[in-house]
Amino acid sequence: GEEVAQTPKHLVRGEGQKAKLYCAPIKGHSYVFWYQQVLKNEFKFLISFQNENVFDETGMPKERFSAKCLPNSPCSLEIQATKLEDSAVYFCASSPPSDTQYFGPGTRLTVL
Amino acid sequence: SQQGEEDPQALSIQEGENATMNCSYKTSINNLQWYRQNSGRGLVHLILIRSNEREKHSGRLRVTLDTSKKSSSLLITASRAADTASYFCATDPSGGGADGLTFGKGTHLIIQP
Image (tube, rainbow over all chains, first blue to last red; front, top):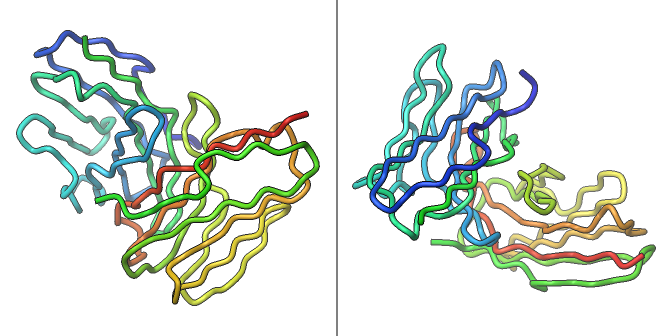
C-alpha cells in the first residue's frame, strides 16, 4: 500500500497485561521504525529494522519491549506486563533507502 | 537523550501573517527534517535539508540551517487556518536510511482566522 497502516487505532490494557501493536509498512520500503510519543510531546525513537533484521534498538526498554518484522507479515511491537508510564501513542514509520520517513497514524495505548 | 529544542513552544498568529519556528540541536547531523502533526494524527514530512545546504524552499515553506550554530528555522509564509498544527524538527545523525530520528519537543502553531 501507499500508506503505513497501524492497528489497532486504540488499545486499552490493565496494568500488567500484554499489549501488541501492528504495523504494515509501505510496500517496497526496506526500513521500519517505531517511536513513542507521550502526552503529545517529543517522539522517542525505540527501534529500527532493515528488512527483518534489527538495525538499531538503543531506544528499547529491553526488559518488557520486543519487536519483530518477519517476511510477509505485519511488523509488531509487543509490551509485556504493561505499566502506567507505557501509556502513549506509538507510531510506526517506514522508508525506502532514503532519509525521509513516512509515518502511520499511530496506536494510542492506554494502560489503566 | 532528546536533543532538539523548538522555540517557541506555542505561537498564535493571524491568518495571512508569516510564522517562524526555530530548532536547536546538540550533535552533528547528516540532515535535519521538519514534520507537521495535526491533532491526533501521524506526522507528515514537510522538508529535509542536508548539512551542506543553507536554505531550502518548498511552496510556502522556507527552511534555513546553520550548522555552526546547530540551529534551523522554518518559515511559513501567508499562513492559513489549515496550517494550525504542531511542528517538529528532527535530526538524522548519519543519513543512509535506517537511523532513528531525534525529535524536538515541537512548536504548537495556531492560526487565527
